[in-house]
Length: 352
Image (cartoon, rainbow, N blue to C red; front, side):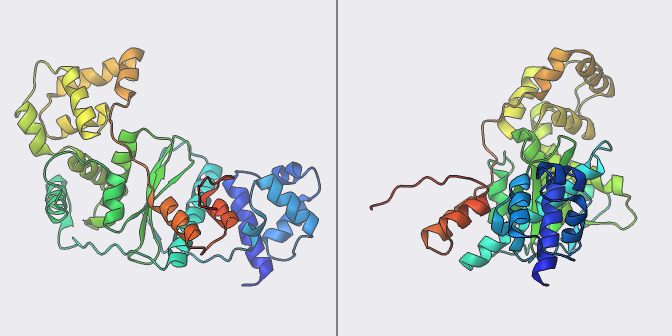
């Protein structure tokens, strides 16, 4: 691939990440770069002058060298990601381009340090067709990973320890998450960084479900999504634990403070707990329906249900730690570290 092609791919990727049309990008350069020229650059038919290059980099908020970074990562497989129907095509493009950019940066710093990890966990001997199969998968994972039956304290750390990379991207609320593969043994779980901790935890485990469960081929996409949701709920708050707390059936009264206590302890949202209670036939249909009616009618109840109370944290630190390690070993420059991390400042102390 020559410089014109590399520049063209990078320009288009950056433009899509910023959700700009060619006309809008041209306008941001104050007319220094025309739409026809942007089209030629993206098609790899022409290289910009230094002046045009600087204008484009400034308009897109990208480092000058970004446009010459070779495209090194190929996404070999992508699980259908969860999104609401009102997510626009432009928003989808921006999500995909930012995801690819961050995956590439992640693997680049691994290569610089000479470290890598593969996800070798195999549970394909269990074919998943229904919720009972999902329970078998969850029980196996908890046993194999020595998780016990209690709350999971830090899911990002847990997943990265077992060979799964986690990245967070800026995305609209209508985007939940996705799982992509670089090769067969390098799955990357992608999160919306703006979500509450409880929603991040659920989304991570939903995507883990996509990574580990071998679904029956006859299942529809909706069926698979539902089973991955069930997987996430069972991982966070198992049916065994629920029955130990509530017994086998609640028909008359459910104290909301009791549900809040579960949210705080297990890091699972109020709404997800109600789904869990319904899925396990612990909560009667009338109480379940009444909760959702009142939640949708009473703003104060909806706000209460959406409040985050989990005291733990869910942030991926592996990537930034690797960047700082590479910087400390003089494997990359400070400018390169800033470019990879997307920051303008790096603070440190030394003996000089």
